[in-house]
Length: 253
Image (cartoon, rainbow, N blue to C red; front, side):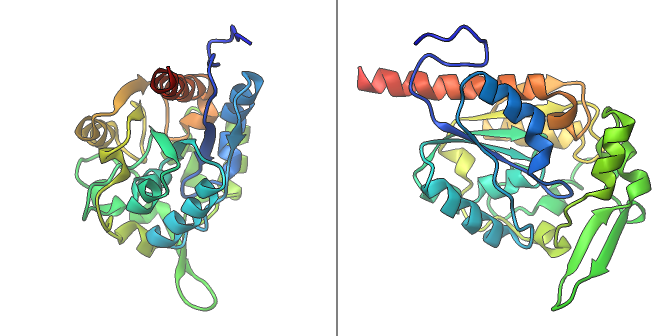
């Protein structure tokens, strides 16, 4: 049946998997998921452990193997996770969408990448690191700094809720280099570049997206773009899904 919604596709499509980054959980995708589901897309939004790069990638890969084929979407830290070689090794992923997200190359770590260009406000005075039982640490943004650094264009009440419900990341994960060829070298990719981002500055987002050959969409938004501009984010994901469906249909013809 032909759909007329601009977010939808005419052909058999992949499941859209929305992966959250550090300092948030899957709820960051609520607005995006609602729009995609209303357009008839199949959507999943798993939670990441946020303990280490390899562990997050292995956890996600196990989810993907049960869902494929997949259009895989990552926000922020999740960009590093979906770039991991373990993701490509599943054979389940048809396309990647990076939403204000890291796109590391082999041997690069997310933390060092974010220091390559000036502008990030993910700096020590804005962060809290707390030891956890059993070893390791939890890293979060100071709640009073969350809105300015992460969600400056989100409604203040909503930003305040995000600030007090952060999901912490193990800071050592940000220093872990990508252990092999990134998935984006062999898969088509899209990138949403947020021009008002104070967490991952626009310069590093553009650098990574251009290097990866991603199809770039720039939007005047903060790092919390899935929350503040779910319409644009959903539209980019739908475009990727339509492209995958068109390729699949051509191969079957």
